Image: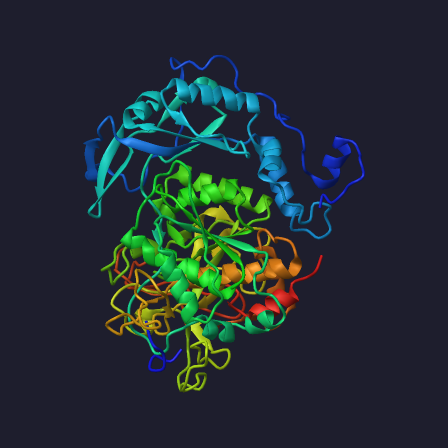
Length: 613
């Protein structure tokens, strides 16, 4: 979009056979309570077992403000149940078979109930645990169908007593948080059954976008549809009809912003469905999250214009929204534009996110997440005014999950302006075709005052998935990110409507524009592409990464290989990975790289080139 042209800112019917034979054929158990009871003896607090991994990395002694008040409310905490070794082995096998066209379990997705039958806790044990939680004074939510965990609410005093810990306040970067000061403990009878707790702290994932009014061109949906070849899909009736995308959030939104955005982009009116996670409390409008929410809802809906967008909101954060969306199988595609660097997560949270990802994939759900906005030094991105990295190499979670598609960002590199029309069309678009790209790195390319570039690198926690193979993929034994990329530079930012910003077309009353950039803007666009893929295939695809990497080798032109540039960031001498000073990060190259993955997308070639079952 030109800035001077708009009014700116199957079990189908089956033959009856024995349940044993049916389970062996499709790998789905259909009876309740098939897992043996694992709780032995009486739940007695006189014998305790410590559950490790709950000391948050940012809840450090120097930030400690002492114990919180005993009446401090703590809502929607989660007790997570540990799978048995046999269950985990069976789940690993199922996840492989669901993506193997030679298997009878290929694309046989589980319902949450079926997932619970195979991989959840025995109902009797679940009832025992619920009774114990209630005896400790907690309010317990209805247990989920997956029987993988149970959520409960109470006060800090109740948590301290029941879990034998102390909840303290911590002042971190000027924000007050709470977290346990020592590891929780549970009655020994529950050891081996309870693996972790979520919600004992209130450190949240952060939105992955930047917002500044700069740039050369301002992108509207028509531009992105042209550049990344969505229009042929639309012309062939693939517009998201009958499909849905769940967008994760932690703030209320104003539906009039969504409606105005769609009107300005000449899109059909298609308001999102808004779900507030039961029991989470209404967060109201959060100024730090509203832009992210509007961006995600508007752009996922823009690129799959007839799909149902389900905005999942929680007063307990986007992590809680993700948990609810997966356990209720709200949509085949989940877009979450929140994250943080891996070292900032408690191990209990990392393990729980991994469990969530596995459940989502087993249920046929695709998770799409941003790779981060601070180049290869993700942790330094938490310091907004930092211009030199000090914390070394790191990657963003949940993008680093092997069960999610990690999305990086590029810069449209049109030196002579040959790829834009001098006027806008009826949809406010002006892009003429695909535009060459380099990695998004505003810090180095445009001397931006900060650390702004596409995230990427190797995970410190997750090993190399079997599907992550192909030219350029490092033999490092680690999950590498990103997987794919799309424009995200502030040089050609995306337009949104947020907080009533769109008064005259995309322009505010003062004629300014509301623009956003970063890996968050690419994430909902990729989620929309997967939705169009699901529509064409008439079934969800689950974890799309195996197919994407295979397609990169078999279908020329499905991805734009970005071979120059990198996500290096200036670093402080003597800090991790920067012994001599200079820059730290990775270079783009032929094939896969830890800058832009296997490349940016050609939506039509990916969707039409996807192998039919």
